[in-house]
Image (tube, rainbow, N blue to C red; front, side, top):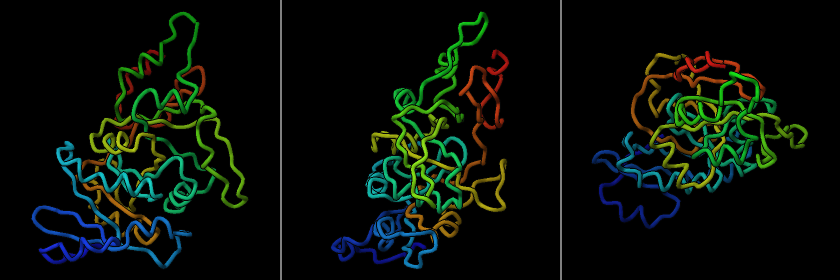
Amino acid sequence: MITQTHRNPSSWLARPHHVIFFQSRQLHVVTNAVKSAKRAKSAGDKDKSQVIIVPVEPDGSDAWRLDQIVDMIKDGAVGILPTDSYPALVCDLESRTAVQLLYELKGASASKKLSILCRNFSDISTYTLGFPVSSAPGQPNFFNIAKQILPGPYTLILQASKSLPKQITNFDSGRSKARSTVGVRLPSDEICQTVLQQLDRPLLCSTANVEGYHAGDMSPDAAVLADMYGPRGLVFVVDVGPRVLEGSTVVDLSGSEAVLVREGKGDVSWLALS
């Protein structure tokens, strides 16, 4: 929920528990949002704060608005960012508490594998074992192909390296479960990349699904996302306006051959080479 307040913000600026931002010519205030990330114990908590909706231009021309988003992620918040496919629930990959909250927001079991949003190929090489290499004649060079299609709307499943934090946990038993594979994304979205660059590390992510919205529809309004996920502990939504919903193309490259898992926004003609 977002509430409109006084035109003169000086009285609110003196109160550190308020987050203030501008949308067009109106001043909006959201109360206690950052505290919710630290206090959230489960998806059923009743003490949930209001959700911050931060409007930004899709081209990143007002990227200064994202500074507070980066700070909240570092504090353990789970929020929604735009990507070059569906909007994504995101959190700090290094925060065990935030990862657990993301799973609760998603309503997912600990066995569900999520993906990571990366800044560059260096991130991919850090958290995975890289792209498969074959010495067989005529086999494609998947690394060269990846350099041609990324950044872009793809989720590539690769063998995970030991550097991948073991935050994806079996929360019922409390025991960490190492993942043999992980989905990696290198999004072309300007806003998503700005947050990643400022955070200086990848984000764990999962699609922010909304009942009744499907591929080809216009994306749900930011307020709809806030109403759906806010009671579960969501802290923020970055709003870039309406977009057509399109899923990423998912390709499994964890073996010796490329396997198309789901065709989405990304072109798949290169798979004919494999």
